[in-house]
Length: 361
Length: 74
Image 1 (cartoon, each protein chain N blue to C red):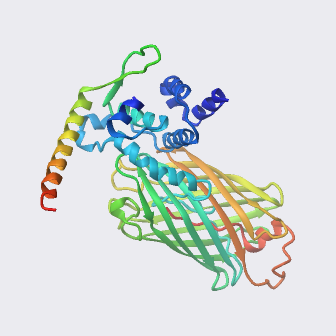
Image 2: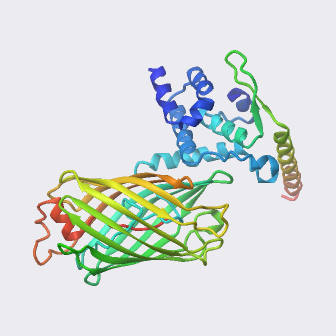
Image 3: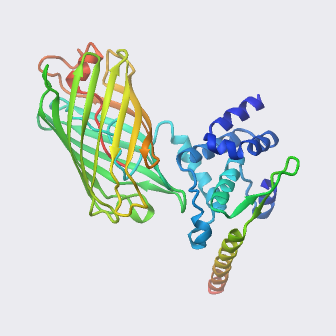
């Protein structure tokens, strides 16, 4: 049993790490494989190696003042990360960067019906070179106060886990948005709309939990449903030149979703963004390939779903993206359908839309 | 190494935490591996590591000195 467990634990680490340390680490585990605490310690470390591997530029050797004590930091991070790991399955999501739509990074023009509401409890994680940002527990609330529009609000807790420096946890930047559908979908035309966003700088920038200044997102989206397939695409510009060290940058992408069954819809996303910092050494463009979807617990009551996504960069700087959420939507009966008559998931998605996109982190 | 650290500072590191630190220290060029000695996998501090450690200890010494001095007024 121990041999199998050790092999499983080793597989949690990235292959490059295993090539370098695998043999000696395996020997150590065989000699000192304790109880659940050890297993948890190893899984936590493996996760960190995957999400935030150390830089291999040896800059520290040339600049000793940059070192903050790797060993001490490892020990101090253990307790905090232990708590985060406990919350990980339900509570995670990224900060500061353009992380958006449930469960994807891109938003869409699909507006919920007039006077309907959406509520998410969500979490996620996003990593880029030198830092892992998590968010969770976080809430999102959307409300259609005016026909064909929706107000959007996010309030997250989160953590910043830099590869150098202390881990911090607390309230991170919030988000306020306004979605508007300009054109509804017809047989030959996609729906077209926008989802304006303002990032609210609530998080403490000095602790790495916020941008310090507000930023805005101005996009244009289109979405078309063809049978069990839906295609969403668009992009825009992120106005973040007021953020210290920030710059305006473009973003965009596309999502293809397929309704596998009345319970499950899945699909890939290709999402790209430009360099977000004035200093090219701090960030670069990236193209992420994500895979996600949503699961309806009861097709007879599709207003309650589980959302999930995971992605990794395929070009540009190395990034990871993960997202999970529980989603509820409710509202008054629409003109052509009562609230308790939502027979199929396909009809549901066409009527009230798929889980909303949002961008935060 | 785990036992050594436990006796030195009273904290027993898990294997993952220990190798997380080793990975970063080696990536930063502060330690380097030595040839294995049977089942032991020794590492030694590098010249750069020595410089960093001296700087860290000097900072800690100043911290201890200042703290001890202020404690006299408590």
